[in-house]
Image (tube, rainbow, N blue to C red; front, side, top):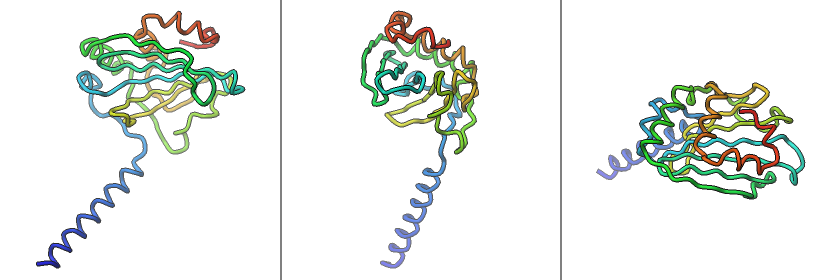
Length: 187
């Protein structure tokens, strides 16, 4: 009897190791369900706009996070991500569902992720890099990127998607002007 229990435990451990190995090498995960299904979940849609590659003291970026109960804008200075400005606006699951449906129509989950192009750093050095993420409970479910130079893994409608995110922040124009590089953000 001990040998049978030991054998079952050993088989279970082998299966667990195989599953963990496959998860580790799975890489980019594509969301296969309509985004609107996340309207009543803790899933967050996030856009990061990373400015031109320059000195740490001059480097600027911002992030827009949209969830079922709020939308948040955060501006950063430097590559270490020092927050220079932040604003949060209330929302609700119905508004979030409409945003998610619009992202679906814009092709937000269409991506072409391979190991050669999974890292956006260094691309389009004098333009912007746009990082699109779907995060659930602090873990990336999907991550794609594009640049103002036309490179990246994002397969959706770039301009539409960028405008959908900025429309979730009521004071976006004012907050963006405060970054001193608003004229170089191409939406």
